[in-house]
Image (tube, rainbow, N blue to C red; front, side, top):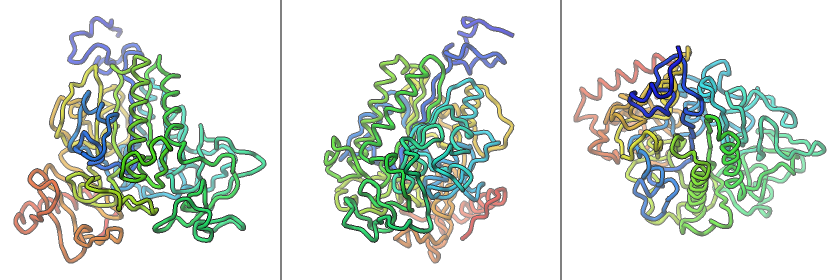
Length: 511
């Protein structure tokens, strides 16, 4: 059955939105909204001026907040990178996959290529799909020859185009891959990667500190690339090695080029910022500009990139019907393995804002992250307290684009909350810290008595001996007052629901 464009004007959304036809035949593809998902790396709830930061300004990201929705309760599923990104791509809890943990740079792809993913859903809807920037969910089969085509990878996950780094800034291989091939590799100088032992004659951060321009505080004693010691060892591939200070603008230009190349058709772009993850090496234009050391400088650099990218959308006339989402893979961290003065130069800035905890933590600072959405054609500027999660983008875009999928996922359709039409989002969420789990239900947070060796403060870790912790986030956003003894009935109910969810998973939690 075919319907004309004008016949759809009476629907609740603008006629330019193809999904709202509720018909088997979609409108012309050019009427569908473009979708851009920007995920920063270790950016905290309090690192943006639109979330209250006073000592650093982020006008690029603030623009999305002013022109769209700023969510005060936007969550990732995990307080570490790989598990969080796995959920974004698959719509599943990371605990459903035993391999969804922080990966080395030579780890195999952890996504089942037979299953639905966010980019596959968008392709199914007729979108061109691209990913630029940080990846960190594995590549290949675990026995990668970096001198050949690397697969499975981004293409098998659902991307038509990819320009990515394999893992993180601080892990080898320190090279870029474009559509599965290492960029700039000289066949006469093949690249080798190993996470168990070094290659004979290759300098390392441990053995050759005189070669370093940045020194480790812990770990990061492996191969030296661009004067920075990394995790793991690599040999060869000298012409392909990246320069950290050029990475931000390179990713920006690749993202802008993808948009330019696909401006006449609907597109989906996953733009993975590498900032402010360590090693923090800003371009000279931003070095020293924040007054907070390299961490503050790279946040300014990331914000500049976002502003430049938004300007590109304006230039191409794409702003009105493009959904732009900005968020972070997990909460903030200061000293994360390098002596970059992140702690000493922090001043009065609070990376997690009023939240407690940060990266790896089960407290809200680990998983409550910046979450901004702009769609000028449809979404009215506002601040929303709706409880939303990155994992739910899959089911929500499925609803928006009327693209069903058969696979069972943990993703929930919270489209109305994402578009600012409802204050009701998720009712509950299991969040992952570092080998441990907590439970959010409405305004309440339950933290079981785990021991987390990655937390320096026993109290902050939910250490054995402190027992269960129960917090009401509406009245105690900083999670300072444990209400477990005051509300035993509420505690028991939440423990029971949490245990039920655990039993439904294939990954046992422990404490």
